[in-house]
Every structure is written in structure tokens, then in C-alpha cells.
Length: 243
Image: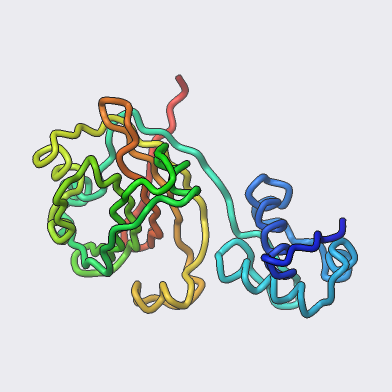
């Protein structure tokens, strides 16, 4: 396989994209060693310097991990889960006697790009609310969460309420939106440099990355979220039941 000439995409980014796709589709499986440098350089017709830059980026994304004297290994695994009832981490923490809280890191109004329009089943350029928050359990940071809400469903939304309130409770009480279903993808990864500063843990600490699509009782997708969760602070579990 030779890489295509693409003036808008650097060569190393093309390699990152191809290897990432092979990890996500299962060609390269969890805990499996990546082919050696010589083989990959021949496959892509690239230098070792370019390959190593690509590998470093995938390591930073939490998809790969370099083992001393052993090579590079896939540390990503994927599970699809579906909940036929709304799952509120806030409410589960309260039930367990844990004090939940959040710090809003950023809040902005954006227009949906092609990726978000697919995730939210809306038109490109649909107005969205984007919220980045750091969540705490008994004042210990454990979750970096990126929320995307379709603005038309949530006029005059106040993100600061999320510091000490459940989002689902706000949806139901303030907007009469009842959440009935969550579709979630769970992957494993490790903490990046930027995340380590927020979560107060060492780089490459294991974590779970989840993406969730949230459906209302009308069948609309009203929310899309991405989470990076430290499970040593909050155990993360779900039950999969055969239909």
C-alpha cells in the first residue's frame, strides 16, 4: 500500500488516519503488537522518522502504547452498550452517598460541522451549545466531559446550573424533555498531558472514553457527549442483558 498524494493532509496524518481506522475496525486488535517499523515503512513507503511521528500521535490519543524493548501495542478496545432507560451518573453518585459537583471550563455557541451533524442527526450549521466541564466526586476530579446540545431544544440554557445539578433533571424540569434512551460506545485509553493537569493524575493513567447519544421520548437526539473517566475514582459498570 502506498500513501496517496494529498496536498491538504500531511503524509504523517495520512498514516495516523489509516492506522487509526485499522484499530477502530479491529484489524489491529486490543493487546496486539503493531507490525514492526521496517514492515510498516515498506507498507506505506515512508521513512522511520515519519512513521514514528505518526505512532507518537496515536500514543497521545490513547490508542497505542510503546513497551520498552517489546514494540508498540494496541491499548484500545471497544464495547457498544445501549440503555433503554436514562442513565444519570449524577443520580447514581447521590444514591451511593457521593457528593457530585462540576466546574464549567468553557461554554460556547457553535454551528454543527459534518461530524456533529451526523452524531446529532441534524443539518450542518445547526446552532449547538458546546459545554466543557470537569466533574468531581467528593471534590476529587474524575471526569472530563464535552457536551453538545441542540440549541433549539434548550433556549436560554444556563450552563452554570450544571455545577451542582443533574443535566437530565434540568431537561425534564425546565424544558419538559424526557430522556428515554442512551446509546453508548465505551473505549479504553490513557490520560494525555493536558488531561493529567485537570485530573491530577500521571500521564498514561488508564481511563475509559465514552461517547453517548441521548434520545428523548419524541425520538429526537437532543444531546451528544464525550467523556474521559477515571474508574479508580468512580467505578464504571453496566449490565448487558440478552434480549
